[in-house]
Each structure stands twice: as structure tokens, then as C-alpha cells.
Image 1 (cartoon, rainbow, N blue to C red):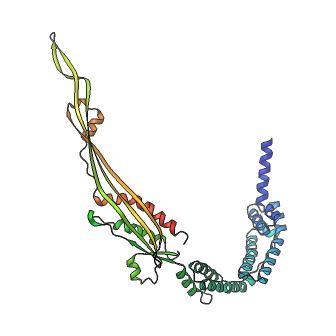
Image 2: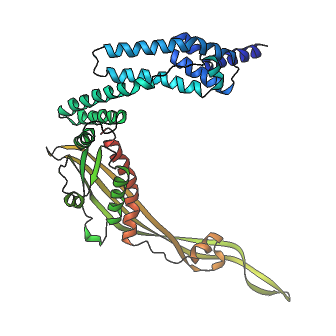
Image 3: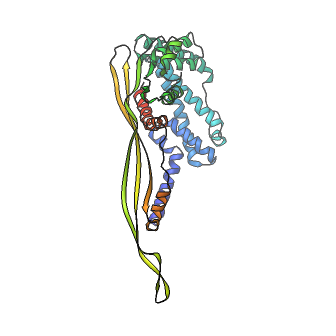
Length: 378
């Protein structure tokens, strides 16, 4: 019985909430209207939602109209933008009601501000345009980034407002961190090429940081070709040290025996009988291990001051190994595992280039998140 009562209570609470009643009681009249309309789309005859909509809609319109008037009368630098948001909410309710027959029966003549919106958008665009110029004149990257979004919003309200497009480009340029990626070539004492690793890093940076972002990466060659007007950071990537093909070979010799193995036959009292004995063999297990490892440094330098902004190191290691065997003695003494081992031929490791890439792979997996983490707030 208690469980049933609890279920009814929870169900009633959910219905009440979805009807917008709780939002209305909190004074969130706009939220109450939108929730009630949403419920009436699903159930046009939902009584609680109709009641909530009937009570909350006029209060929402009054509250939003008053808020818009108060914003316009204020000294806020964003008063027209704020007023616009209130008027747009009134229009949102208008559209939502028109698209819900159950709601339209409750509010047959919803109000809208489409006629007034044009002039408000014009003033909001002017307001944001001026704020963008003020932000840009402060001369910091953070303010340039803020200016970019202000210009972008102004352009959204009134496309091509004044010379906002030119200011968008200027703000974007001032807000962007231009990074030249200096990847030091791999020493050729191993006759290796780090080109694949370097290409993979560059591919990631070019694919994930585009003109839409506030961080751009260039190789030294790219920076020279486009005559990059400014370098903010230098990202240096180089291997502090690495070794490829450090080989060790270990041999282990063991003697194995097996009892009661037929080794021949003999005549006993005129009868031929099998002869059993213990057989043995020496098994040599050979294990070859080839280790390749290296350490990559990532250094970000402020191009203007030469100061180091971050310095991290990433290790990588790859171990190749193979095992095979040989024996001397009686093969019958061998276990199945020994037989399989001795059938193997001596194995040879991958070439040096392949092993370099193998130990560089875990380095790449550490490097990319580190770059992403460092530049995520830029």
C-alpha cells in the first residue's frame, strides 16, 4: 500500500513539473509557459497544463515587456542586447503557441514583437559594434578575443553592419596565437627517418586547429611561404636521446629425461621381450630480445621574450622478442612443448626504421594530449 501511494505521489510530481506548475510557482513565468506548451503538444487536453498556460502567459508577457523597457532605460552597455533577448522570448512563446493546437485554444491571440525587432536589432548591433571597438583598443589578446565575439554577434543581428566584417578579421588576427612548430630531424646515425612521425604530428595540428580556432600551427616552411606576419610561440619537438636495436641473447640449457621408454628388444627364455630404459636429451632454449626506446622533449617558447612556457618529456619503448630451441640426445625424452620449441627457426627482428616507429607511437599518444591540454585555454 505504501509503495502504491509513493508511486502515485512521484507520478503526480512528474506530471505537475512537466505541466509547468512548479516553474510558475517559482516565478519563472516564461519557463512555465514553455513547459505547459510542450505538454500540450503531447496531450492537447491536459487540464493542468492549460490552467498553467492560462495563468502564466499574461504574466510572462508583462514581465518580459517590463524587463525590456527597464533595460532600455538603463545605462548598461548591453541594454539593447538585453532588451532584444526579452522581445525574442515573447516571439518564442508566440511561435510555440501557434504550433500547438491545444495551446492555441487557450491563448488564441498570442503577442509578438516582430515589427519592433528590426529597430532593436539595429541598436543592439550598434551597441555590440562599439563595445567590440572598445575591447579591441585595449590591446590585449583576451580583449581581442572578446571583441571578436562582440563583432560576430553584431554581424548576426545586422549582417555586414558598417565595417564589422573587417573588424572581425582584425580581432581574429589579434586574438590568434600563431605557433611555428620546429621539429628537429632525427640524427642519422641509425640511417633512420623521423618523417612519418613528424608528418603525423603536423597532420594532427593542421586537421584539428583551423581558421575557426584562436590557435594556428605552421611549419617553418609554411610560415616562410605565407610570410607569416607574427610568431607568438615556437613549439620545439626533438628527441633528447634514443637507441634502436639493443640486442641481448640468452641461452638456457636443461637436461630432460623420460622413464620406461622402449629402447630395444631381448630374448628371454626363448621369447622376444621389449627392453625399457630411461632416455635423456639436452635442450637449449634461445631467447633473443631487441629493445628500442627514446625520449622526446616538447618545449613551448614565447617568441617575443624567449621564455619557456612549458617543457615536458615523453618516453617511448618497444621490445621485440623471439624464442626457439635445439636439442642433443634422444628426441623421445622431449615433451610436446620442447618438440614445438625446437621446430622453430631463428627469428629476426623488424628493421631499424620499423622499430623506431614502434617506440615513437606511444610517444605520439602522450604528446598530442599534452599539446591539446596546453592550448585548450587559448
